[in-house]
Amino acid sequence: MTIRPLLQYIILSVLILSFIQAQNTGPGAVPLAIRSPHFNSWLPNPGKAQWPTFWNDRTLELLGYIRIDGATWEWLGNSGGNGTTLVRTEITPTRTIITLTAGPMELEVTFLSPIEPTDLVRQSFPFTYIYLTANATDGRSHSVQFYTDITAEWVSGDQNTNVTWSTTPNSDLIYHQAQRASPNPMQEINDQAEDATVYYATANSPDVTWQTGADAFRDHFISTGDRLLNTDDGDFRAISDYWPVFAFSVDLGDITEISTPVVWALGIVRDPTIRYDPGDGSTQLRSSFFWTQYSTIGDAIRAFINDFPNARQRAIDLDQRITSDALSISQDYADLVSLSVRQTMGGVDITTSKGLDGQWNTSDIMMFMKSVGDTSRVNPTEFMFAAFPAYLYLNATWAGFLLRPNLQQQASALPASTYAMPDLGSTYPIALGNTSTTSTEVLATESSGNMIIMALAHAKASGDGSLISSYYTLLKSWANHLAANALNQTACDISSDGRNNPNLAIKGIIGVRAMSEISQIVGQADDASQFKDQASAMLQDWENRAILANHITSTYGQSASWGLIYNLFSDRLLNLDFITQR
Image (cartoon, rainbow, N blue to C red):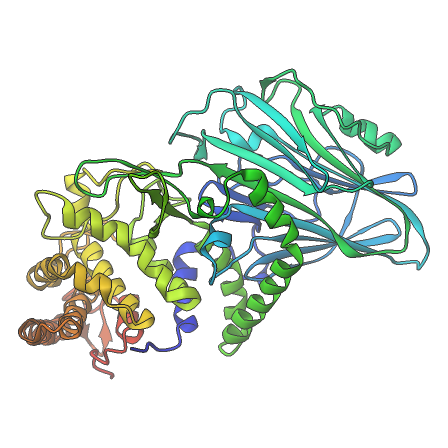
């Protein structure tokens, strides 16, 4: 099975999921580290004295200094030192590259959030690279030291929370870690996870020193540039109580350029990651897939640091491929794609479970999405649908991992619903099922259409028909609901009153036509013929109601209204050639 080139369809994801403008019009914030629903940071104004923030504007302190010939410049944060001058900001699908001048040197700071579409272990490891290169603009040699630290704001949405921390120095690796003194599993405060551990790591060398303690020693570095003391502050306390920080410094001596990057790794780890009900009332505690390869976090961090040169090249290659495909449409489109892909991949947790023998079940792979920036819903079908073309483009097999928990839970639930649920629960990361009768009914057409269209798109793009075969009865029941209700829906989340909504109706009609294709693929010829005939009759009825005065209306029967009928895109995505071209 084949599917048309998919990058052209990622625009739907961009329009719905991206809240910032294209590069050439100046984004409101640039993405820094985006690797999971709970590891998500932004910089509002590159080149300004500002802290990075969580997506909801809560501060996540990450500080960077460069000291040159005894003078200190701040390349990230808002804690003192001379201000740098922004030269440019470049955003690619995997990287944000900020070029600054600091006195006699030009500094390039890169935040790399890897996208690894052929490697589940690497993709599920919630770490990002921060790396720097520099060169002297005057061609002379200069004494250069770097300093960077983080606070414990990364592990809780409550600054009064007590935290603990430690530092693990090895011969080849040093990493700080911090976490709540009393973690709250599967809970959030201000959308931040309350069961997270933050890690900050770098490769060890004679040039590297470290320290933990009150943020006052930042000022000491500004004034002296002295090496850190390699000491750990054991006075555990609240995040905001003298702001314990976890720092590294690097003394590069006299240099004219930094051609081999200085690299740090920052990550947020939760384990378990998801609490999931497969539909039978039991509960699974699911973990990030990377644990199937690593028995300790230290081993995983070491592998991540050691893999940096290769990871960097893979990112450059992927950026070039995505950008080249997008540029075949336009520069503006390439900018939009560059802003959206990291958000799409960083909006999910890739998980697995353990069997009764306590061993990882590496064939039990599920992806869970949080509706970041909206609510805290788990696997909301309208967000999945908006992001789905990106998953199909990057790795169509993975798109099935996202569908699987929704299908499994609803196929096993009793009593079974005749239409698709809009999500797996309202409070990420708890995926125990949707229990809101009102919200499920008003979103029935939207959710059922989404799930059927995505199921067929996955089967066509991946060549894997196992999901549509295993869950055929469930998909058929949803298609029957659409056949009876799509033309005259109750409501939808995009319109306060979805009745007589041609845009929503056409999604349901295409869903019925997609079910005909599914039936044909799995060998149900009678069903295929029935759904095809139903969809054709519905389409004719829709055209009679929705097309007035040579345009498509936003409301049946109102010729003065005009509709942006973006749900027609599914016909092109699936290669149905079902919609009449006029």
